[in-house]
Length: 304
Image 1 (cartoon, rainbow, N blue to C red):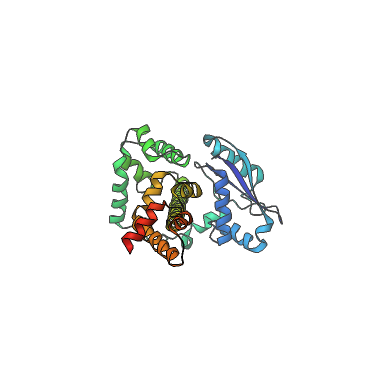
Image 2 (image 1 turned 120 degrees about the horizontal axis):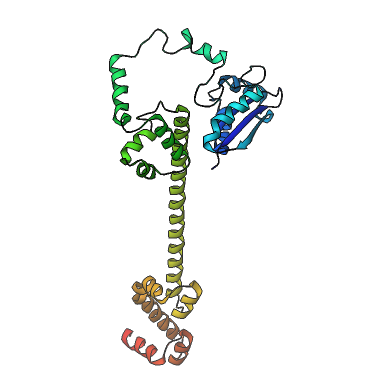
C-alpha cells in the first residue's frame, strides 16, 4: 500500500481531476467503480464521464509520496494543472485538508437553497447528543492525535495496536475508527476508512467462503476414497493391494473396513459354495479364491 497523488484525465478535452490517497491504487479503483455506477460525489466529473464514456478517461498515478506530504503535493498539482478552473479541470477544492479554497460551483451549492440545512436548525437535543458523543475523548486527544489514528488504520495497523500506541482501551479506538466519536476530524479519511472496512469485510467473507469450499471438497474426496476402499475390500483385494492402490496407511485401512469383515466373509463363503456346486474340487476353489485349503473345507463343513 503506497500513498500518493493520482489523476483522472478526459482525453477528449484534456480536463483533469487531481486527488490524494494513502492507498493511491485502491483509491483510483474506487473512483472508477463509482463513476461506472453513476454514483460519484463530483457530479461535474460524473456528467462528463457519462457523456464521453469510460474509454476516453485515463486513470493514472502522478507520484508516490509520504503521507505527511500528501496535502502539499495535492495543492501543488491542482494549482499547476489549474484543475479548479471549470475550463481545465474537475476539482471543486484547492486540495489538502487545511485552509482549503472552494470553487464557485461548490460555494453556490452551500448557499441558500443549495444548503440542505437552509432555513433549518438542529434541535437542542441533537446538538447535546453530538456534544456528549465527542466529549468522552476530548480530554485525552487533540485533532492531530485523531488524524494520526485514522492514518495508522488506513496504513494497515490493527485497532488493538493503535490502542497500545496511545495507551487507551480498544473500545475508545473502535469508536473513533467507526465514526462514533471525532468523525468530524479529517472527514476525508473517515470516508476512506469506511471504504476500507467494507473492502476488508468483503475479503474476509470471500476467504470464509473459499475455506468452506475447500473443506467441502476435501470431505468429498475422503468420502469417495472410503467408498472405493470398501468396494475393493468386498471384492476381495488384499490389504496390501488396497493400501498401495489408494495410498492409505494401515490405520486408515482398518478404520475404513473394520465393519465389513463379516460381510466380506459371507461373500467368500457364498463364492465357495457357488464354485463347489459347479463341480470344483476343494483345492481348486482354494487356489481360485486365494484361500487355504483347510479354510475352504471349514466353510463347506460349517455351512452344509
